Image (tube, rainbow over all chains, first blue to last red; front, top):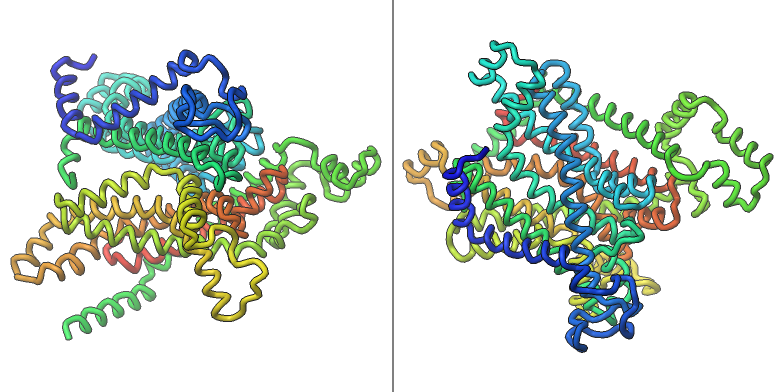
Length: 285
Length: 344
């Protein structure tokens, strides 16, 4: 659907941002690590494969050392990448679904519906989001699904506000008025006329939301609210917290993994912003 | 002389606000809205407690060590759990209004008592973190904007980018490792030296020493946001006409930055401060857990470990109420800072 020269233009702008290229590189590595985890490590990240408290760079094949139970930290990092990316992307999709639907209806129909939906959005924005996520996961029991839903439920309000704003300004444009005159149904106008025009800011916001979702997921699993059957970076740090004085590496490496992944997503988000909203990208770079 | 005149006119304007009917209506509306939000959270809390695993009466009976049906029935009657749902809801809302948030069967104390004992520690921590983040953030952002394109700007931008991506609980652990374990400069555990028996000034200093690492690590993430925001906002303002006019009039550059640019660029930062309040409370759970800080965040973590749902939701309610209160204050502050603000 997108024209070829537009694609080239997009990449030209994206690649001009050095940070974005670096971010894309790191992100690619994290993605490969997650995808190839079962090939890189023949054993599960839960299995005890070496003596406990093995320092990093000490033994062949155990670059990152082992944890308090002799589990390979390298394997934990690789398999943890899977859950971080999965939760980050899927919970963002959940938030996008809620936010786009509510924002589109509020902005398109306006009036009382808009008022009601925006008060509802403000309400969710006022509640401390991390505290709400903790409560939701604790009450509905920790699992990958409950974590994803909790993060989605606390992250949609900014999407709704953004989409509403776009809809408000696009609704009065000529091409939309033309569709109204042609007698197109409202849902069709919303989905096929206006929505595609709101995509660029939504995509930029989504990439930054994935980063925040990964931070949230790691914080939840640090508190012991992750899926008990899945190895995650936050869990690794939480489990190593009590031995931080003896074994720095057990919490250092997973933390670096979170930092680099989140950083790379933020950088890519800025690059997308440059490439998709060129008129906004001039200032302050 | 000119400055005194300016201050006077500002004071005059802000006192004028008090007589302004529009602003009073605005504040009144905000208050009513806040009450509604609070009520909504209470109702949400009620249903979440009902959704928690385990029949509350059975859990209570289990805690008391008596599992027989008759006792469970008795408990049900005593706490009104056999009543219809809407009656229970009214009872619950009524309880919250009188600050009765139920009983923590694990800690064997009323939830409200547990929370209010711990609240001052959290207010101290989040207050300190808030100040650190906003002061350092605005300062660094302003510095970066004033030196745009130079090395100081690049450095600040990169540092802000990194802190914005750093997990709060991890940087807290690393700070403990470096400053407490390796260097031994600062305490990384608790709010005061246990058993030191300090009084007066020595006691306060001891608390300040314990406060440094937790408040800095809690504030770093927001410092990064403030720095980025202030920088962007200042660069936006610097191109506006009134700044050009000031330059053309030959106003001293330092004064332009301070009075014309920063003052106008600060508005988005004030908006952000309201949003930050909510996140600080969440962040406090992580920070207090790492530093064993005796506040409500740590209480929430304990409630999590013990699956103490009454306590968990009590902390959730109080932290939401704190955020709403803080948002009211920011709204009010906003009307003072920006005389142009449109009040709807």
